[in-house]
Length: 357
Image 1 (cartoon, rainbow, N blue to C red):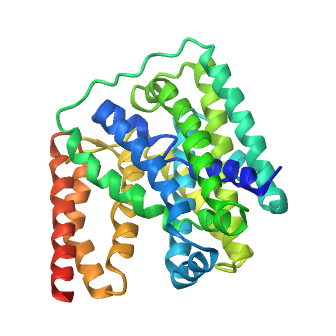
Image 2 (cartoon, rainbow, N blue to C red):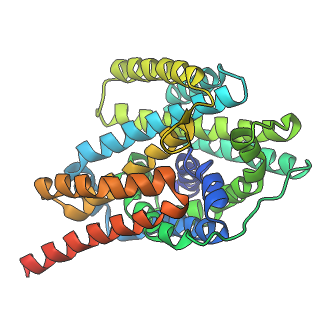
């Protein structure tokens, strides 16, 4: 198999993590089909665009070398996000050892990283098999009714998915090693990843019953759990593999950090299961999950947009944090604060460009 096709599967699996595999449930529940449509377009389009942004490999290598610390932080946050979500999923379905299973699979992939693209192919085919099996079950329909405040989600989604891919270490690996990066990115996201998203949209109602209604249709949900376990394990392994290969972090420190965080996450989520935050009537676990979105919609994109202006970057983060926090964590009728946050960010960028002129 050509490296072009190998890295198409690699990209599709490395990008289907707990954001793509679960966030559509929240978007559909809170905002309806317009937000899901925007999620799909910006997610797929933003990922593909990175393959066309760099004109040659030297340009990509220069970019990666210049932004090494930020790329490493992106991977650390992404790994932590996966670990937290699997711990939450395990507690939700009364399977606290689910995270251990994910880490065991990731460990095997990590120690056979020389053939990681073939692992991606195998996991993709298994995922499609689970998809087909799920379609044969009696799964509940997804409610896609549009909610009145959906427009406020569009710009944060666009900003996050357009800029975040440039800090994903697995994307840089694929661009370097694929014989035809543009084609790998196009097939990987425009065909393979899009198909996996179709699975996510189909199971959204079933998995939503588990998390939001405490109803567990066992025969229906197990293919979904299997799908998430495979995809998240691959994502963790792919990021860990690149972090160690590129010498961002020593393997021993990486393993110990993951182990410690996993134990803390499972313990914490077991203790606070079904806890509601009084001041906002918010489920604590979901609030913690959505807190990670702050990084991908604001922290990482703003880093790329503001470049070397560290002081400006810090104070813009400070002034935008309240608006983004209210919009993401509470949402609903408070979603307008996301638009306020984006407006504040845009005002700073316009002001800086005027000064430079």
